[in-house]
Amino acid sequence: MFSFFKKKAPPPAVPSPEPAVALSPAPAPVLEAPLAAPPTPAAAAPQARAGWLGRLAQGLKKTGAGITQVFTGTRIDDALYEDLESALLLADTGLPATTWLLNDLKRRVKEAKATDPAAVKALLADAIAALLQPLQRPLVIGGADGQANPTVIMVTGVNGAGKTTSIGKLTRYLAEADQKVLLAAADTFRAAAREQLAVWAGRNRVEIVSQEGGDPAAVSFDAVSAGRARGCDVVIADTAGRLPTQVHLMEELKKIQRTIAKAMPGAPHEVLLVVDGNTGQNALAQVKSFDAALGLTGLIVTKLDGTAKGGVLAAIARWGSERGRVVPVYFIGIGEKLEDLQTFDAREFAQALLN
Image (cartoon, rainbow, N blue to C red; front, side):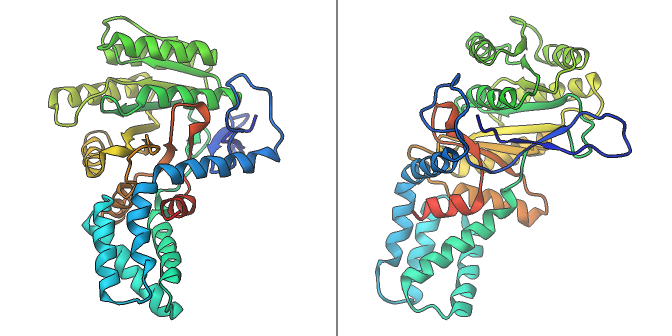
């Protein structure tokens, strides 16, 4: 079965290093295939990706309709840009990103000498893709130098964002790419979270370190230590969901991060935040808060199959560009199935948003 991973050549100066593995946007597994399905022909993968994009467009249909209806007229004037500004703001794009998009669109319209609103719509897709492009970056397993062995990934998020499910799907793809994965059930506050992660571990045939009622930092330390001793390629720590306003719980996350670093210098190599695509501008607030506390390295945006407005990705991109450090979006999710979690592609997302 196709996977998102490809081997990365090790540095020539280091003898026999562990190969790094990179996640890169590419065709996905065939839709509707069960988890244990045999490998599918490579020719079927592009069609599967197209089917997934169709579902993404359907999930963003409400937002897309609000934007595209601006281009149903026959004139390109101030009224069109004013209506577009309102539509973008309603899509949770935020004022900074909306202002940037309008200015960039006007520049493109002038350069292209566009006179048809339909042409302006296509230029808007180009502008959105350009704004989102910095968010498109592959998740590299093994570290930039190929020496992170194991690669330690710390996953955070608020309750209900789909954090544990996303970990399960990511684990499956890693396992299919011949990566030895160890899970750490560091969400010791909620029994259901440990049980859910244990189910994913069993389904994916990977090991799990869990302790009922234990200290989350201690569980993470034990997992990283075990991962190093057992020759694992990846250790993924699932942490308890929490609101960024809960100061004492955010301090607990910092403690987990420090403890992981004690178990393995330089770890965690990735600190991922899972955000619900339905939460709009609140998602941006979560990114800012978790980044300030932990220094995020990537995002997973879930639940883009419902009433999600989608514009918040533009807000996140503009925020990152303004401060000079973008937090990339490694994955976006549109449902509960394994193949519903896919790598983020800026151009594809812009086209799906505008249908």
